[in-house]
Length: 257
Image (cartoon, rainbow, N blue to C red; front, side, top):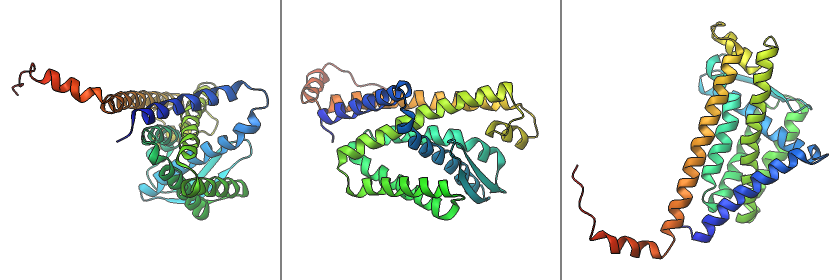
């Protein structure tokens, strides 16, 4: 059972990571700091495409990253509907899932190690260019090292920052996708690929809006669960809470189902 101070620390880390992420967006030349994180988020995005292809019995030829921060995953076979949707949604789900997993600080090192192993495997099996290998090895080895050697508090801070970065960057990317889908739908994007995979039944903008809406729902639901969990842990860790229940139990009638 976590103590009340640990619950407060977990929430403070979330606020600090969010504030730091937002601040970096407005600090001049902060892109030097955020660029590596941008590559990390892109790698997670492309990993989503690759895993979706493998999960639907398709194949992955290679994953490549570009120096401008974008990426591409070359697949064959599989279910195009799921593969095209997986990129943006995986980034959101990874960030949101990580936030929920990090409600317990002791999970931070496991989260870091798991992320590191995943990135290293993706790099070794599907790395398609020098930047993909560089980013995959650096982030994979770095996360694995943090998971194995870093203190629990450092791992908690680091992974909380990555989780917030993934969620916010997912929304930033979806905003760009919405713009491109609305004003330049012929440009190769996941939304255009999705439209083609479904026979052009719906235009790219509809798919972009759908992914944006799903991401909003996922993040909103995550924050509700996170907040509710923190309140419950705070109440359970308060020594006055059992006494309060005991004092009132005699006045509560047994419900009939």
